[in-house]
Amino acid sequence: MAGTRRHRSTISFVLPGDAEDVLPRREPGASPGTLFVNPGAEPTVAKWLRFGPAGCREGQLESADALEALRPDAGNVLWLDVRGLSDRALLQGLAERLGIHPLALADMVNVRQRPKTEAYETFTLHCAHMVSIIGGAVHIEQLSLALMPGIVLTIQERDADGDVLDPVRRRIRHGQGRVRQQGADYLAYQLIDCVIDAYFPAIEEIGHRLDLMEEAALQKPHRHTGERIHAMKRTMLEVRHSIWPMREAVATLLRNEGELWTPPTLVYLRDSHDHAVQVADILETYREFSSNLMDLYLSSVNLRMNEVVKVLTIISTIFLPLSFIAGIYGMNFDTSTPWNMPELHWRYGYVAALALMLAVAVGMLWSFKRYGWLGPRRPQNAGDVDAGH
Image 1 (tube, rainbow, N blue to C red):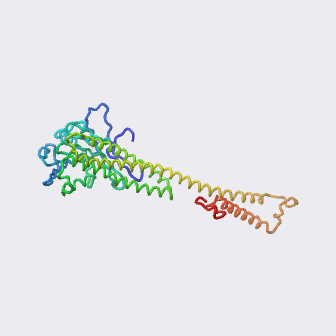
Image 2: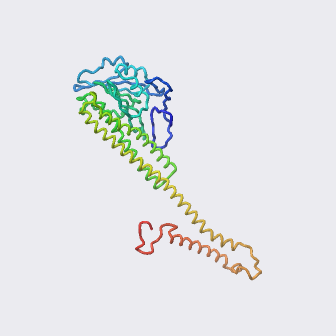
Image 3: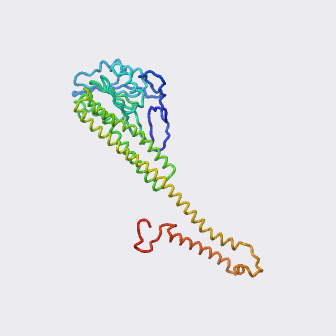
């Protein structure tokens, strides 16, 4: 909806127009860095994982003051995993203790920001959109990531089990991969890579639904088919608005020459950029296909309508001469004059009139069939057989 900012997008594959949570508009003239917390936002839960080559510890942060005891030492990395945006005091307290600029915190909390990368003096801010499929619908939520020496802070809108970042949590807990042996920038890369890779199941589901819609548009076009195609185009537009800016955001990280991103990690980040480009290309192909699918649906509807009109026209055309014959014989004539129809005194006149009507109807049907107006036209010889007749 134009002029509004949404807290969480829920784009259904079935029908458009689902109810969405809407954020209050930014007040004109508000001070820069002001936090606008949605009253319907989920409760804030701040969890932490502190890990290194020796092992992993995790827990829940009850207050911002407890952050001082979790400061990582050499060789360890601290991941502050914040979910939910309702506790303004906790979010501001964490930002103050981590040295996060108020403008950066506003970008983290005032969702939905355009995916972007911004470099500050002591940290790097990366805003992204996480895409997930829940109950047959595509859900998009903002993930904000701040990378600083030895610490990664992530803030997301929902606290849900099995979200996009869960594979990274499992790798840290079970010591899988290289994440425990690397620094905070490698953890940030892993998180960004998971966010981008989560687009592939979403576009795979979109492709599957497009195939089903194509079959429905060809075989049984219905009014709801057009609505579903339109809803799918809205879905792909939302996903496109998420993945295209993310390509540029990751490209900005690749051009980063600061100390937070080490050259070995930037090599891995190149692979994530390639995945983002691949998702964008596939999505553009699907968007073009959906436009063609709408044209196919409209053509199928028009074709079916033409078939119905043709059948009704044929029926009307057949009954036109029959009505003429019945009208002639239904006229009141003076039987005493010799200038009269002889069939009026013929014992078989009624049967002959019906036979004439039947002969006319059969003859017209045969003519329609012969000229291809009723079903495919029969070829005159073997050389006339082709794909169209």
